[in-house]
Length: 400
Ligand SMILES: Cc1ncc(COP(=O)(O)O)c(C=O)c1O
Image (cartoon, rainbow, N blue to C red; front, side, top):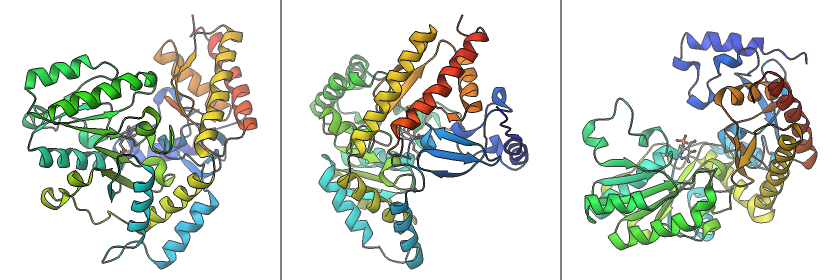
């Protein structure tokens, strides 16, 4: 174990002088407790592996916070982006790729009659909320799960007037949603938007069907945030896996294997409302993201990406369960194989375990994301590191 991450932390300290938190994304901020272990800066990736600025190699289950479903630097996707780059990134009028990718999404996503593109997941979710309000003429939005910073209301900086028409409710039980409709009266709520909770995602069979009935009964829209579930749980995400069709949905991360692109999709009559409510962005429809998405969609159509994400995830979950039993430690994994959630007894144990894994060349996250490049041998290699890491954390007394 001769790994050092000195250059990473020197860069991080330099970044703090010019960038609050040192990072653009909260989840990428290194943890003080992992100084000396966490690689703050990654230089490159290939397949299921990444290399940090100190030259250390890792098997990466963070997958760039979810969007890497195929793997890093996939030649077919890179070539498509490079070819498009030679022609140009963005133009003064629309590009034909906008139609091609939209047509494919209409073919494969149950709720998609009509499609529009933006750049990030959160702004596309904000677009669906704007559309829902414009279409229904109602103000209130009920959310369930994280939809990006733009849609996170319980924070300083959001006026009370805005907060008062937004309500965040927990995943899994229809009762609080029913109560909100009862309290506000059926004609106040424009939409319910929902992102799956990963640890108890199977509750979605009942919960999403119940939300579908409840919203339909009150003339409110149902919006699925498929930013993580799309192209991971199933190609068309939760709506395909659970067989519940929302009115609108957002896809992003895996749709273009990490090249920034988001799509909001749904019923044509609602989507047509973009004319009046005005959702418009200079970078909506940039050709690089669309070239990547076209290549990604072709790979998903041709190869069993989803089956592989599930199979590798299953091997990982079974392996972690076996390690926990063998070492007699209170560690488990909840949720479904392509996006399982590691359960540890305390935040201290979690940080210590992640640190010990990093020292052995494995990057973890609260959600363990699989990608199409992971071979069984990569999973087995990662499991050996995880077993050593669990033993190390146990010897520190953090599982007592
Ligand atoms: C379920 C979900 N919705 C929305 C978002 C926000 O997407 P973005 O960060 O691209 O704005 C995220 C980001 O992690 C997410 O996981």
